[in-house]
Image (cartoon, rainbow, N blue to C red; front, top):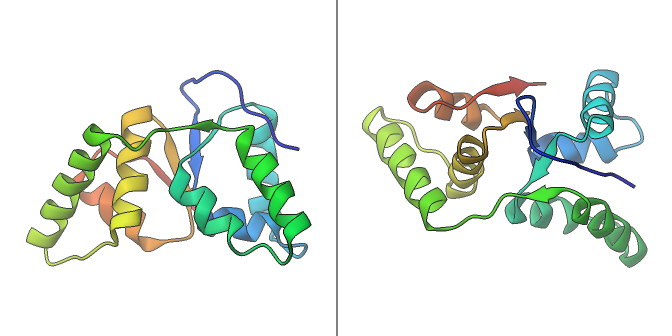
Length: 140
């Protein structure tokens, strides 16, 4: 089971691209170690989009329930109007630079900025977002 406590300067929002690797039995040691350490420090956040992306890939219903229980232990960043508006502004800025980023990644990036979290990912879209917005990232 995973747990998360109070927010702080080292808070992270782990993207589905990293969670999927973390939950694989053959996950890379750097991913497993980093995520396990963050979970132990109680600094991990999530958003509903990430829960959906990860949990829908469960191999069976018992695994689905375990994943839902794990994610329910994390602080959830709400995707309200302000986060949506920030995501739209970031997407607008990126398009002005000839870059297109999926709305899901824009929302995840904006939620991380709003909550003061660093995004841990395996998705170049977050690096593109960081080029036009104050998003802190860690790429695995």
